[in-house]
Length: 278
Image (cartoon, rainbow, N blue to C red; front, side, top):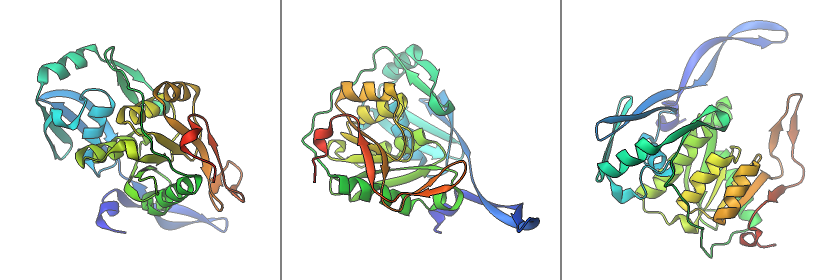
């Protein structure tokens, strides 16, 4: 395991049940880092994230929550220790939005920002991809998810070209955080999100779909479920939402067993024309 992943894990002592008896053992646990974000010296929020790609996270978080509208509004993002200090060019604009912000507890226990002026443009793109590419991308995310494979303690997400070439894959303790990091990476690296698709291990609830729509990503697929409000936002914005993406050999953990998928499947809920039949 390389340094990027090892800095997100810690080895601890534990007791492991083996053949009906407890024995001394070790386990790898995910590190949870608190990061306080300051804008032009003023505190904005403290978040819990995995300690990697902090700059991408801050950029994606500020964009996804509507505090900035594009990367050009950022003067600098400096991360040191447990603090991220952001300088924006138009401090008054951010201050007005901060004052109007209504924080709500969202699915998964996170806190999302909403304010009256935040709106979403309809996603307009000719990008299309195929079911084979969706499966390939989901498999790639799991293949690259070293922390998940070792601990099952994180979520993962990835941004891909229509041909399923990976642009960026990330892992984090929060499914919302994975989107912020992926979107932040795209903003920093000037990626045209309108010609990409996203896959995630997390449930597509309203706050997840909101971030994706705001970034202009036309297709979002998850290995799990979608909520009704997530679907409503997706339809309004023209997003293609795909749930329950499970290829042959996928392992599904239930309360009683590990089930192995024998036949590939997915459910396309909205704007299926972007995923033509093959």
